[in-house]
Image (cartoon, rainbow, N blue to C red; front, side, top):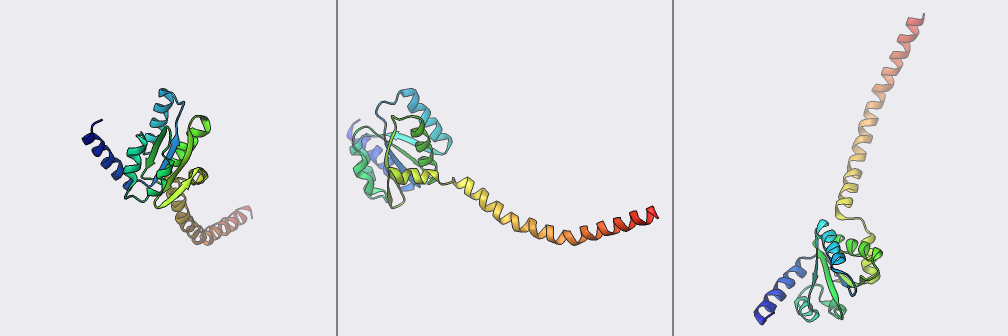
Length: 172
């Protein structure tokens, strides 16, 4: 990579960091190419990206972003996982690390908050944005169905009373 390519890569990575909801830094020493491709495809399916970058270039790209505090994590063989959804990248990285002991989560960032490995795991335990939207929608719809049930209940009770009187008259 010549200087111009490095500058372009750092600028692109800087813009990526600025637009990311969450960034995860992990050590990947010992992962095979197939395992790395598997991680990338799982991350892509959730709307995230995995990149391997030179530590020095990643540290330069972090300057001027909210995640500038995590520059110390870039030592050794590290990869960067990021997504616009603050839960997607930590969740996929954590799930992959559970099944593969060669991927070690070092930490990350969410907005201006620097996270250690436990913070990333805690973030991964939260429901995703889509799950939260579904729960919120369910909570909004529940009162409406209860109101409809309460309003319909007296009419249903009246219908049952009339049906009972009709059966009583038929029997007599």
